[in-house]
Length: 221
Image 1 (tube, helix red, strand yellow):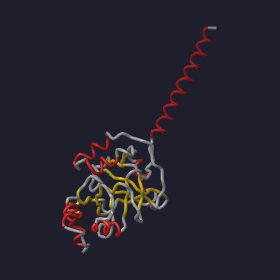
Image 2 (cartoon, helix red, strand yellow; image 1 turned 30 degrees about the vertical axis):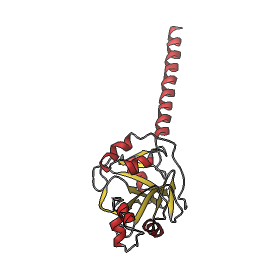
Image 3 (spheres, rainbow, N blue to C red; image 1 turned 90 degrees about the vertical axis):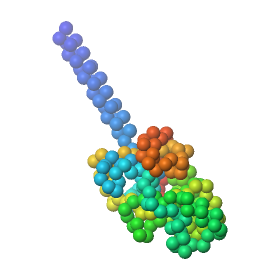
């Protein structure tokens, strides 16, 4: 009787441990985060140009992934960059205001042809993507509207170049521990992008309040 009881006790404990292991595995899987548009990618790798980078992902799908590094300077101003493009400013004050806006190093891809504008609120231009309270635009028309003073945006920052991954590449890098994924709460993202000094953004991103993923496909505004 005692041996039978011990056997039943052992099987019961085994069942409890198996259930605990199953639940633990389920929790781990639930905590894994997919790289969806609107997510932040925090670099865990130490090789340039991505070392200590914060990447705002705005496209992810079968054709690959696109994002912008948002915590590194390209060491030029938006106003002066627009002046080099021979854009006509409404007045001196408009130029000076844009000259105070720092251009960011968006990534190593297409640096000679890709200028993206991160702004709030999202606007009317196309091609563009909307990520909650933030918009990303690569339309030349927005540059002309900024110069003319008719863009109607509260905040804007430019990124030169892109961060890009071929189909399946980002997932492979994540599986290898190269990136940590964060879903920032929509109300927290503008503060990181427009109010936080560049040198503080990597650590700030780690402590942002998180929300549900946007889980939206590429979306033309």
